[in-house]
Length: 280
Length: 263
Image 1 (tube, helix red, strand yellow):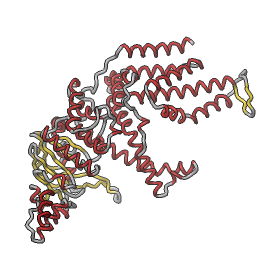
Image 2 (tube, chains in turn blue, green; image 1 turned 45 degrees about the vertical axis):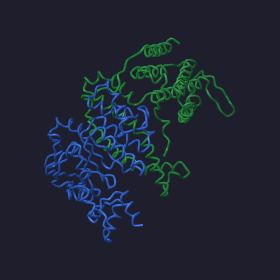
Image 3 (cartoon, one colour; image 1 turned 45 degrees about the horizontal axis):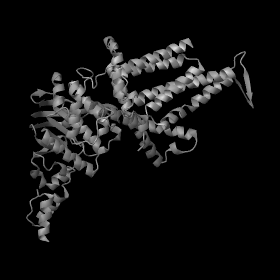
Image 4 (cartoon, chains in turn purple, orange; image 1 turned 135 degrees about the horizontal axis):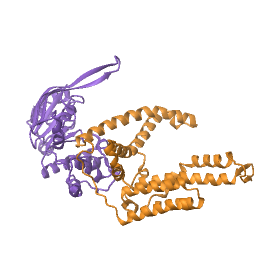
């Protein structure tokens, strides 16, 4: 269980005009918990505090107020940090900025080496991770020869090799083209079936998180709304205020509802197609 | 996107790639010493031929070899002019070739110096192109291990070196992007004339510096979140063992150094 209690977080920055140190608060008294194997989507505008929130979860940043607990260990307790980081892994937006190795194998081995994984079993584990994410490359392939989608799959393989209990995806699909994005999301869910872990997914593309257990909407450093997706799908205005757009088929279902047609907003693309065909 | 792959190590599964990295670094240092100490034209030429033969054995691109040597042209020309035309010692045989006058011994010294420059660059190039930076770094770390007792941050230095190599092609790509973005806005890099091209470099430095810092920051966060905390508790990615092949190469390089003193 990830447990965040009244956590606040501030950045200290130089104020250019006045040449003084300025503190900007990006998280205000946030309280939330994430259970094992849960799928939680973090939504909100850029700068609303989603990424800062996830950085608190694996102790990369420490809260200025409040506490963060991972499986009963506090992130401000330094000796616990290696175990916390092993349990909570992050895949970042730009795959190039998180790859340390020159080849696929070396990059996966980097994390394994850091946690003191037995050297004799390392090759086996690398092959397991490559297979888990369905990366079509052997371990000797240079990372410079991978496509954008493959690089992100490698980033995923590198963190999954460490068997995290919680995986955070910080806009991990934002640099991918639509096809690569779909493939990446499918790979992720396939990997979750084979090796269950809680998924904390930051995105601006709602169609990627329709299957989530919960959506958590951040607004100005606070959790504005936390609940199942159905609670959000009828509230297009709120989503629009937070810079989010419903998938077109949900927006169409809502438009039909507004015209008095009895259509549930949570209708899937195929169900909506069948319904429209019946009207025809 | 610029194709910088020829600047980097590409796995080819050749004989040279199988050498133990500790031995490869040691042999390179011995060979570099023999190149620097050697003043015999025939022996130095033989050393260069040996390096070119190793290039062929390593299945490296001939285009890369030509590119490497051509990039040294300015050093070759200036060395030859300086050695053979500007410096003449009493008793030197002077040769007149049209308007040019040069010393015979100076020309030989110039060729030796050019071979020395080419040899060192080819040797470094061979090592970098036939060894994965991570393996090279691990080899370097093993060699420098005794210095850890003197509290020298060997692991950190080697990690910095590895990451610098890893990010080199990305930085080259970044330079290309910034250059094109500035050219699209009328920047001076594409204009004719060395001075305007030179001036065009400066506006590229600041965005490149800022981008490098941002990348470094993101990489540091990513490394830390993947449980990196220095060399404490790390297991080696590979286990290295010296083979008969490695000892033979080491013996050969020692003989090569010995020959320099004998000849």
